[in-house]
Amino acid sequence: MKKKIVLILFTVLSRVVTDAQNLVITGNLYPPKVPSQTLLISEQIRNPIDNSFSHIYEYIPGKNLSFNAKIYLPSPALYWLNYGGKAKKVFLSPNDSINIVYIKTNNVDTIITADGFETSNTRLILSGNNVQQFTFFDSLENKTGNFVGKRYNVDFTSPGWENIYKDSIKLTYDNRMAYLEKYAGNYHLSNEFINTARIEIKATYLSALIAAVYHEEKTKFPTGYFDEIDKENFTWDKYKISNSYATAVYTYVTHYLNWENIGIGTKEQSLSSIYDGIVTNLKNDSVRNFHLTYLMSTTLDKHPDNYEEYLDKYKQDCSNKTYVAGIEQAYDAYMARYNNAAFSAQLLAKTLFKSVDGKLITLKELLAKHKPLLIDFWASWCGPCLMEMPLSENFETSYKDKIDFAYVSIDASEEAWHKALSKNNLPGNHYLLLNERKSDFAKFIKLNYVPRFVLINSVGKIIVFNGAQPTNTAAFEKMLNTNFK
Image (cartoon, helix red, strand yellow):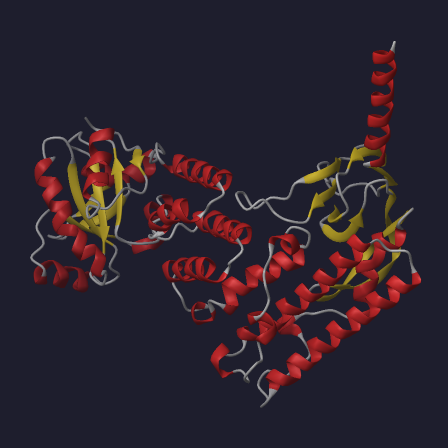
Protein backbone atom coordinates (compact mmCIF):
# COMPACT_ATOMS: atom_id res chain seq x y z
CA MET A 1 0.00 0.00 0.00
CA LYS A 2 2.86 2.38 0.92
CA LYS A 3 4.56 1.63 -2.42
CA LYS A 4 1.32 2.47 -4.29
CA ILE A 5 0.95 5.79 -2.38
CA VAL A 6 4.59 6.70 -3.09
CA LEU A 7 4.09 5.88 -6.79
CA ILE A 8 0.92 8.01 -6.95
CA LEU A 9 2.67 10.93 -5.23
CA PHE A 10 5.64 10.61 -7.58
CA THR A 11 3.33 10.59 -10.62
CA VAL A 12 1.41 13.63 -9.36
CA LEU A 13 4.61 15.56 -8.57
CA SER A 14 6.09 14.66 -11.96
CA ARG A 15 2.96 15.93 -13.69
CA VAL A 16 3.08 19.17 -11.68
CA VAL A 17 6.75 19.73 -12.55
CA THR A 18 6.12 18.90 -16.22
CA ASP A 19 3.12 21.24 -16.40
CA ALA A 20 5.26 23.99 -14.85
CA GLN A 21 7.70 23.55 -17.74
CA ASN A 22 5.01 23.83 -20.38
CA LEU A 23 4.46 26.73 -22.78
CA VAL A 24 0.86 27.20 -23.88
CA ILE A 25 0.53 28.57 -27.43
CA THR A 26 -2.72 29.79 -28.96
CA GLY A 27 -3.56 32.10 -31.81
CA ASN A 28 -4.89 32.77 -35.26
CA LEU A 29 -3.27 33.37 -38.67
CA TYR A 30 -4.17 35.13 -41.89
CA PRO A 31 -4.58 32.75 -44.88
CA PRO A 32 -1.14 31.62 -46.11
CA LYS A 33 0.28 32.89 -49.39
CA VAL A 34 1.53 29.39 -50.25
CA PRO A 35 0.30 25.99 -48.98
CA SER A 36 3.55 25.28 -47.13
CA GLN A 37 3.68 28.61 -45.24
CA THR A 38 4.41 27.71 -41.63
CA LEU A 39 4.26 29.40 -38.27
CA LEU A 40 7.59 28.72 -36.58
CA ILE A 41 8.98 29.30 -33.12
CA SER A 42 12.71 28.61 -33.38
CA GLU A 43 15.77 28.62 -31.20
CA GLN A 44 18.07 31.64 -31.60
CA ILE A 45 21.30 29.88 -32.50
CA ARG A 46 21.83 28.03 -35.76
CA ASN A 47 23.13 24.50 -36.01
CA PRO A 48 26.65 25.21 -37.35
CA ILE A 49 26.78 21.92 -39.26
CA ASP A 50 23.92 22.64 -41.66
CA ASN A 51 23.20 26.31 -40.90
CA SER A 52 19.65 25.54 -39.75
CA PHE A 53 17.49 26.58 -36.81
CA SER A 54 15.79 24.08 -34.50
CA HIS A 55 12.06 24.66 -34.11
CA ILE A 56 10.25 24.17 -30.81
CA TYR A 57 6.88 24.64 -32.53
CA GLU A 58 5.65 24.39 -36.13
CA TYR A 59 2.13 24.91 -37.43
CA ILE A 60 1.00 24.70 -41.08
CA PRO A 61 -2.45 26.32 -41.11
CA GLY A 62 -4.17 24.73 -44.11
CA LYS A 63 -7.92 25.33 -43.77
CA ASN A 64 -7.70 25.77 -40.02
CA LEU A 65 -6.16 29.13 -39.20
CA SER A 66 -6.44 28.70 -35.43
CA PHE A 67 -3.99 26.76 -33.30
CA ASN A 68 -3.70 25.60 -29.71
CA ALA A 69 -0.77 23.66 -28.29
CA LYS A 70 1.14 22.89 -25.14
CA ILE A 71 4.87 22.24 -25.51
CA TYR A 72 7.70 21.49 -23.12
CA LEU A 73 10.04 24.43 -22.52
CA PRO A 74 13.10 23.60 -20.40
CA SER A 75 14.20 27.14 -19.51
CA PRO A 76 13.61 30.84 -20.26
CA ALA A 77 15.15 31.95 -23.55
CA LEU A 78 14.89 34.22 -26.56
CA TYR A 79 13.24 32.70 -29.64
CA TRP A 80 12.42 33.62 -33.22
CA LEU A 81 8.72 33.90 -34.09
CA ASN A 82 8.21 33.71 -37.84
CA TYR A 83 5.24 33.62 -40.18
CA GLY A 84 5.33 34.81 -43.78
CA GLY A 85 9.08 35.34 -43.76
CA LYS A 86 9.27 38.02 -41.08
CA ALA A 87 11.07 36.99 -37.92
CA LYS A 88 10.47 38.63 -34.54
CA LYS A 89 12.31 38.10 -31.27
CA VAL A 90 10.18 36.92 -28.35
CA PHE A 91 11.36 35.98 -24.88
CA LEU A 92 9.53 32.90 -23.59
CA SER A 93 9.59 31.19 -20.20
CA PRO A 94 8.22 27.91 -18.82
CA ASN A 95 4.63 28.34 -17.64
CA ASP A 96 4.02 31.18 -20.11
CA SER A 97 0.81 31.43 -22.11
CA ILE A 98 1.23 33.32 -25.37
CA ASN A 99 -1.48 34.25 -27.85
CA ILE A 100 -0.21 34.95 -31.36
CA VAL A 101 -2.40 36.72 -33.92
CA TYR A 102 -1.26 37.64 -37.43
CA ILE A 103 -3.68 39.81 -39.40
CA LYS A 104 -3.84 41.55 -42.76
CA THR A 105 -4.65 45.25 -42.60
CA ASN A 106 -6.02 47.73 -45.11
CA ASN A 107 -3.52 50.34 -43.98
CA VAL A 108 0.16 50.02 -44.81
CA ASP A 109 2.36 50.50 -41.73
CA THR A 110 5.95 51.73 -41.71
CA ILE A 111 8.01 49.56 -39.38
CA ILE A 112 11.62 49.64 -38.19
CA THR A 113 13.76 46.67 -39.27
CA ALA A 114 17.42 45.72 -38.98
CA ASP A 115 17.99 47.33 -42.39
CA GLY A 116 16.16 50.59 -41.72
CA PHE A 117 12.45 50.91 -42.52
CA GLU A 118 9.97 48.96 -44.57
CA THR A 119 6.25 49.01 -45.20
CA SER A 120 3.93 46.16 -44.37
CA ASN A 121 0.23 45.39 -44.53
CA THR A 122 0.53 42.58 -41.98
CA ARG A 123 0.45 43.02 -38.24
CA LEU A 124 1.45 40.81 -35.34
CA ILE A 125 -0.49 41.12 -32.08
CA LEU A 126 0.89 39.34 -29.02
CA SER A 127 -0.85 38.87 -25.70
CA GLY A 128 -0.56 36.59 -22.68
CA ASN A 129 0.64 36.39 -19.11
CA ASN A 130 4.08 37.87 -19.91
CA VAL A 131 3.21 40.27 -22.70
CA GLN A 132 5.82 42.86 -21.62
CA GLN A 133 8.58 40.33 -22.21
CA PHE A 134 6.99 39.10 -25.47
CA THR A 135 6.89 42.57 -27.00
CA PHE A 136 9.97 44.27 -25.54
CA PHE A 137 12.31 43.95 -28.52
CA ASP A 138 9.80 45.38 -30.96
CA SER A 139 9.13 48.31 -28.67
CA LEU A 140 12.89 48.80 -28.16
CA GLU A 141 13.51 49.44 -31.85
CA ASN A 142 10.44 51.60 -32.25
CA LYS A 143 11.32 53.78 -29.24
CA THR A 144 15.10 54.08 -29.70
CA GLY A 145 15.80 53.67 -33.40
CA ASN A 146 18.10 51.01 -34.78
CA PHE A 147 21.69 50.22 -35.72
CA VAL A 148 21.94 50.04 -39.48
CA GLY A 149 25.68 49.82 -40.12
CA LYS A 150 26.55 51.17 -43.57
CA ARG A 151 23.17 52.87 -43.90
CA TYR A 152 23.67 54.96 -40.78
CA ASN A 153 23.14 58.66 -41.43
CA VAL A 154 26.84 59.56 -41.68
CA ASP A 155 28.85 61.01 -44.56
CA PHE A 156 31.65 58.44 -44.80
CA THR A 157 33.65 60.69 -47.13
CA SER A 158 33.90 63.55 -44.64
CA PRO A 159 36.98 64.04 -42.41
CA GLY A 160 36.51 62.66 -38.92
CA TRP A 161 33.52 60.53 -39.90
CA GLU A 162 34.81 57.75 -37.63
CA ASN A 163 34.06 59.60 -34.40
CA ILE A 164 30.75 60.94 -35.73
CA TYR A 165 29.72 57.39 -36.58
CA LYS A 166 30.81 55.98 -33.22
CA ASP A 167 29.09 58.78 -31.31
CA SER A 168 25.88 58.11 -33.23
CA ILE A 169 25.75 54.39 -32.57
CA LYS A 170 26.92 54.89 -28.97
CA LEU A 171 24.01 57.27 -28.44
CA THR A 172 21.60 54.59 -29.72
CA TYR A 173 23.25 52.06 -27.41
CA ASP A 174 22.93 54.35 -24.38
CA ASN A 175 19.29 55.11 -25.24
CA ARG A 176 18.53 51.41 -25.46
CA MET A 177 20.14 50.62 -22.14
CA ALA A 178 18.25 53.50 -20.51
CA TYR A 179 15.00 52.28 -22.08
CA LEU A 180 15.61 48.78 -20.69
CA GLU A 181 16.21 50.12 -17.17
CA LYS A 182 13.05 52.21 -17.32
CA TYR A 183 11.07 49.30 -18.77
CA ALA A 184 12.33 46.98 -16.04
CA GLY A 185 11.23 49.53 -13.45
CA ASN A 186 7.72 49.74 -14.86
CA TYR A 187 7.08 46.02 -15.26
CA HIS A 188 7.81 42.79 -13.45
CA LEU A 189 10.56 41.26 -15.57
CA SER A 190 12.58 38.14 -14.84
CA ASN A 191 16.31 38.32 -14.18
CA GLU A 192 16.87 35.97 -17.12
CA PHE A 193 15.04 38.36 -19.41
CA ILE A 194 16.97 41.43 -18.21
CA ASN A 195 20.29 39.64 -18.62
CA THR A 196 19.37 38.49 -22.14
CA ALA A 197 18.20 41.98 -23.14
CA ARG A 198 21.47 43.55 -21.96
CA ILE A 199 23.51 41.04 -23.95
CA GLU A 200 21.36 41.62 -27.05
CA ILE A 201 21.74 45.41 -26.84
CA LYS A 202 25.49 45.23 -26.25
CA ALA A 203 26.00 42.71 -29.06
CA THR A 204 24.05 44.81 -31.57
CA TYR A 205 26.17 47.82 -30.67
CA LEU A 206 29.42 45.83 -31.13
CA SER A 207 28.24 44.61 -34.55
CA ALA A 208 27.50 48.18 -35.61
CA LEU A 209 30.90 49.30 -34.36
CA ILE A 210 32.70 46.54 -36.25
CA ALA A 211 30.79 47.55 -39.39
CA ALA A 212 33.00 50.65 -39.52
CA VAL A 213 35.78 48.51 -41.06
CA TYR A 214 33.71 48.34 -44.25
CA HIS A 215 34.71 51.94 -44.85
CA GLU A 216 38.36 52.20 -43.91
CA GLU A 217 41.33 50.09 -42.90
CA LYS A 218 41.33 49.24 -39.21
CA THR A 219 44.86 50.64 -38.67
CA LYS A 220 43.72 54.17 -39.61
CA PHE A 221 41.09 54.47 -36.91
CA PRO A 222 41.74 56.67 -33.87
CA THR A 223 43.62 55.03 -31.02
CA GLY A 224 41.26 53.09 -28.77
CA TYR A 225 38.42 53.17 -31.29
CA PHE A 226 37.87 49.42 -31.02
CA ASP A 227 38.78 48.99 -27.35
CA GLU A 228 35.33 47.61 -26.50
CA ILE A 229 35.74 44.89 -29.10
CA ASP A 230 39.34 44.09 -28.18
CA LYS A 231 38.39 43.74 -24.51
CA GLU A 232 35.21 41.76 -25.08
CA ASN A 233 35.36 38.23 -23.69
CA PHE A 234 33.33 36.16 -26.13
CA THR A 235 31.82 33.43 -23.94
CA TRP A 236 29.49 30.55 -24.66
CA ASP A 237 27.10 31.57 -21.86
CA LYS A 238 26.34 34.76 -23.79
CA TYR A 239 26.56 33.11 -27.16
CA LYS A 240 23.94 30.43 -26.65
CA ILE A 241 21.21 32.84 -25.54
CA SER A 242 21.59 35.68 -28.06
CA ASN A 243 21.52 35.58 -31.83
CA SER A 244 22.81 39.16 -31.95
CA TYR A 245 25.78 38.10 -29.85
CA ALA A 246 26.43 35.22 -32.26
CA THR A 247 26.25 37.72 -35.13
CA ALA A 248 28.72 40.01 -33.36
CA VAL A 249 31.22 37.17 -32.99
CA TYR A 250 30.77 36.19 -36.64
CA THR A 251 31.34 39.80 -37.74
CA TYR A 252 34.37 39.96 -35.44
CA VAL A 253 36.12 36.99 -37.09
CA THR A 254 35.05 37.67 -40.69
CA HIS A 255 35.47 41.45 -40.84
CA TYR A 256 37.34 42.86 -37.88
CA LEU A 257 40.07 40.19 -37.85
CA ASN A 258 39.92 39.72 -41.61
CA TRP A 259 39.60 43.29 -42.84
CA GLU A 260 42.49 43.04 -45.32
CA ASN A 261 40.65 40.35 -47.31
CA ILE A 262 37.23 42.02 -47.45
CA GLY A 263 36.27 42.31 -51.10
CA ILE A 264 39.77 41.60 -52.40
CA GLY A 265 40.85 38.24 -51.02
CA THR A 266 40.50 34.98 -52.91
CA LYS A 267 38.37 32.17 -51.53
CA GLU A 268 41.57 30.43 -50.47
CA GLN A 269 42.91 33.53 -48.67
CA SER A 270 39.55 34.09 -47.02
CA LEU A 271 39.32 30.54 -45.69
CA SER A 272 42.91 30.66 -44.40
CA SER A 273 42.60 34.08 -42.80
CA ILE A 274 39.24 33.49 -41.12
CA TYR A 275 40.21 30.00 -39.94
CA ASP A 276 43.49 31.20 -38.43
CA GLY A 277 41.72 34.17 -36.84
CA ILE A 278 39.22 31.89 -35.13
CA VAL A 279 41.90 29.56 -33.77
CA THR A 280 44.08 32.42 -32.55
CA ASN A 281 41.52 34.84 -31.14
CA LEU A 282 38.51 32.89 -29.90
CA LYS A 283 39.71 31.56 -26.56
CA ASN A 284 36.44 29.97 -25.44
CA ASP A 285 36.47 26.35 -26.58
CA SER A 286 32.74 26.13 -27.33
CA VAL A 287 32.66 29.41 -29.29
CA ARG A 288 35.78 28.41 -31.22
CA ASN A 289 34.33 24.98 -32.07
CA PHE A 290 31.09 26.56 -33.22
CA HIS A 291 32.77 29.03 -35.57
CA LEU A 292 35.26 26.56 -37.00
CA THR A 293 32.33 24.28 -37.79
CA TYR A 294 30.21 27.10 -39.23
CA LEU A 295 33.14 28.19 -41.42
CA MET A 296 33.74 24.68 -42.78
CA SER A 297 30.00 24.26 -43.40
CA THR A 298 29.44 27.54 -45.23
CA THR A 299 32.67 27.24 -47.23
CA LEU A 300 31.90 23.74 -48.51
CA ASP A 301 29.70 24.82 -51.44
CA LYS A 302 32.34 27.35 -52.51
CA HIS A 303 34.95 24.58 -52.23
CA PRO A 304 38.21 26.56 -52.44
CA ASP A 305 41.16 24.43 -53.51
CA ASN A 306 42.61 24.44 -49.99
CA TYR A 307 39.39 23.10 -48.44
CA GLU A 308 40.71 19.57 -47.92
CA GLU A 309 43.84 20.96 -46.26
CA TYR A 310 41.73 22.89 -43.75
CA LEU A 311 39.34 20.00 -43.31
CA ASP A 312 42.29 17.97 -42.00
CA LYS A 313 43.25 20.84 -39.68
CA TYR A 314 39.65 21.20 -38.53
CA LYS A 315 39.50 17.55 -37.46
CA GLN A 316 42.43 18.24 -35.14
CA ASP A 317 41.42 21.72 -33.93
CA CYS A 318 37.73 21.12 -33.18
CA SER A 319 37.26 19.27 -29.89
CA ASN A 320 33.49 18.78 -30.41
CA LYS A 321 33.38 15.37 -32.08
CA THR A 322 29.67 15.67 -32.88
CA TYR A 323 30.48 18.75 -34.96
CA VAL A 324 33.40 16.97 -36.64
CA ALA A 325 31.26 13.95 -37.53
CA GLY A 326 28.60 16.26 -38.96
CA ILE A 327 31.06 18.11 -41.19
CA GLU A 328 32.62 14.85 -42.39
CA GLN A 329 29.14 13.59 -43.30
CA ALA A 330 28.33 16.88 -45.08
CA TYR A 331 31.59 16.69 -47.02
CA ASP A 332 30.92 13.10 -48.10
CA ALA A 333 27.39 14.05 -49.18
CA TYR A 334 28.71 17.07 -51.10
CA MET A 335 31.24 14.95 -52.99
CA ALA A 336 28.66 12.23 -53.63
CA ARG A 337 26.51 14.73 -55.53
CA TYR A 338 29.24 14.95 -58.17
CA ASN A 339 31.05 11.63 -58.00
CA ASN A 340 29.19 9.23 -60.32
CA ALA A 341 27.52 12.10 -62.19
CA ALA A 342 27.34 11.33 -65.91
CA PHE A 343 28.00 13.74 -68.76
CA SER A 344 25.04 14.07 -71.11
CA ALA A 345 25.27 12.75 -74.67
CA GLN A 346 25.15 16.34 -75.90
CA LEU A 347 28.09 17.35 -73.70
CA LEU A 348 30.09 14.29 -74.68
CA ALA A 349 29.61 15.16 -78.36
CA LYS A 350 30.25 18.89 -78.00
CA THR A 351 33.54 20.43 -79.18
CA LEU A 352 35.26 21.36 -75.93
CA PHE A 353 39.01 21.27 -76.48
CA LYS A 354 41.72 22.28 -78.94
CA SER A 355 44.82 20.12 -79.35
CA VAL A 356 48.35 21.51 -79.65
CA ASP A 357 48.21 21.13 -83.44
CA GLY A 358 44.90 23.03 -83.62
CA LYS A 359 42.47 20.12 -83.93
CA LEU A 360 39.08 20.55 -82.27
CA ILE A 361 38.27 17.69 -79.90
CA THR A 362 35.18 16.37 -78.09
CA LEU A 363 35.14 14.63 -74.71
CA LYS A 364 33.86 11.52 -76.47
CA GLU A 365 37.01 11.52 -78.61
CA LEU A 366 39.20 11.76 -75.51
CA LEU A 367 37.42 8.66 -74.21
CA ALA A 368 37.71 6.80 -77.55
CA LYS A 369 40.38 4.40 -76.24
CA HIS A 370 37.75 2.97 -73.86
CA LYS A 371 39.97 3.58 -70.86
CA PRO A 372 39.38 5.76 -67.82
CA LEU A 373 40.60 9.34 -68.25
CA LEU A 374 42.34 11.48 -65.67
CA ILE A 375 42.20 15.19 -66.56
CA ASP A 376 44.83 17.43 -65.01
CA PHE A 377 43.47 21.00 -65.22
CA TRP A 378 46.12 23.70 -65.13
CA ALA A 379 47.03 27.20 -66.42
CA SER A 380 50.20 28.94 -67.52
CA TRP A 381 49.91 31.46 -64.69
CA CYS A 382 49.41 28.79 -61.99
CA GLY A 383 52.67 28.03 -60.19
CA PRO A 384 51.26 25.11 -58.13
CA CYS A 385 49.93 23.56 -61.36
CA LEU A 386 53.41 23.53 -62.90
CA MET A 387 54.76 21.97 -59.69
CA GLU A 388 52.17 19.17 -59.83
CA MET A 389 52.57 18.34 -63.50
CA PRO A 390 55.93 16.45 -63.43
CA LEU A 391 54.55 14.19 -60.69
CA SER A 392 51.34 13.72 -62.68
CA GLU A 393 53.44 12.70 -65.68
CA ASN A 394 55.30 10.14 -63.55
CA PHE A 395 51.97 8.55 -62.64
CA GLU A 396 50.99 8.60 -66.32
CA THR A 397 54.01 6.47 -67.12
CA SER A 398 53.20 4.00 -64.34
CA TYR A 399 49.49 3.68 -65.22
CA LYS A 400 49.65 4.02 -69.02
CA ASP A 401 48.10 0.58 -69.57
CA LYS A 402 45.15 1.31 -67.26
CA ILE A 403 44.37 5.04 -67.48
CA ASP A 404 44.72 7.82 -70.06
CA PHE A 405 46.00 11.20 -68.87
CA ALA A 406 45.04 14.54 -70.46
CA TYR A 407 46.42 17.95 -69.50
CA VAL A 408 43.81 20.65 -70.07
CA SER A 409 44.69 24.33 -69.77
CA ILE A 410 42.09 26.93 -68.80
CA ASP A 411 44.19 29.79 -70.23
CA ALA A 412 42.21 32.58 -71.88
CA SER A 413 45.16 33.18 -74.20
CA GLU A 414 46.13 30.43 -76.63
CA GLU A 415 49.46 32.18 -77.06
CA ALA A 416 50.18 32.01 -73.30
CA TRP A 417 49.30 28.31 -73.33
CA HIS A 418 51.70 27.50 -76.19
CA LYS A 419 54.43 29.62 -74.58
CA ALA A 420 54.09 27.75 -71.26
CA LEU A 421 54.24 24.38 -73.05
CA SER A 422 57.41 25.39 -74.87
CA LYS A 423 59.11 27.14 -71.95
CA ASN A 424 58.54 24.28 -69.53
CA ASN A 425 59.05 21.52 -72.11
CA LEU A 426 55.86 19.79 -71.01
CA PRO A 427 55.27 16.33 -72.51
CA GLY A 428 51.92 14.50 -72.62
CA ASN A 429 48.57 15.02 -74.30
CA HIS A 430 47.80 18.73 -73.95
CA TYR A 431 44.58 20.55 -74.78
CA LEU A 432 43.14 24.02 -74.39
CA LEU A 433 39.65 24.30 -72.89
CA LEU A 434 37.50 26.36 -75.25
CA ASN A 435 35.60 29.24 -73.62
CA GLU A 436 37.64 28.58 -70.47
CA ARG A 437 35.56 28.37 -67.31
CA LYS A 438 32.48 29.83 -69.03
CA SER A 439 31.83 26.63 -71.00
CA ASP A 440 29.01 24.22 -70.18
CA PHE A 441 31.62 21.57 -69.44
CA ALA A 442 33.41 23.80 -66.90
CA LYS A 443 30.13 24.72 -65.22
CA PHE A 444 29.09 21.06 -65.00
CA ILE A 445 32.24 20.08 -63.13
CA LYS A 446 32.37 23.40 -61.22
CA LEU A 447 35.83 24.26 -62.54
CA ASN A 448 36.47 27.23 -60.25
CA TYR A 449 40.13 26.61 -59.46
CA VAL A 450 43.35 24.91 -60.58
CA PRO A 451 45.20 22.64 -60.13
CA ARG A 452 42.27 20.25 -60.27
CA PHE A 453 42.13 16.52 -61.01
CA VAL A 454 38.98 14.83 -62.31
CA LEU A 455 38.74 11.11 -62.98
CA ILE A 456 36.21 9.97 -65.63
CA ASN A 457 35.40 6.38 -66.60
CA SER A 458 35.33 5.12 -70.16
CA VAL A 459 31.59 5.83 -70.65
CA GLY A 460 31.69 9.43 -69.46
CA LYS A 461 30.79 9.16 -65.77
CA ILE A 462 32.69 11.18 -63.17
CA ILE A 463 34.30 8.74 -60.75
CA VAL A 464 36.26 11.31 -58.73
CA PHE A 465 34.99 14.87 -58.86
CA ASN A 466 37.86 16.52 -56.99
CA GLY A 467 40.81 14.19 -56.78
CA ALA A 468 43.92 14.23 -54.62
CA GLN A 469 46.92 16.05 -56.04
CA PRO A 470 50.10 14.16 -57.09
CA THR A 471 52.20 15.97 -54.47
CA ASN A 472 50.17 13.93 -51.98
CA THR A 473 51.61 10.79 -53.52
CA ALA A 474 49.97 8.24 -51.24
CA ALA A 475 46.49 9.75 -51.60
CA PHE A 476 46.84 10.14 -55.39
CA GLU A 477 47.98 6.55 -55.83
CA LYS A 478 45.21 5.31 -53.54
CA MET A 479 42.66 7.24 -55.63
CA LEU A 480 43.82 5.52 -58.81
CA ASN A 481 44.13 2.05 -57.30
CA THR A 482 40.81 2.21 -55.47
CA ASN A 483 38.80 3.16 -58.53
CA PHE A 484 40.62 1.15 -61.22
CA LYS A 485 42.32 -2.00 -59.98
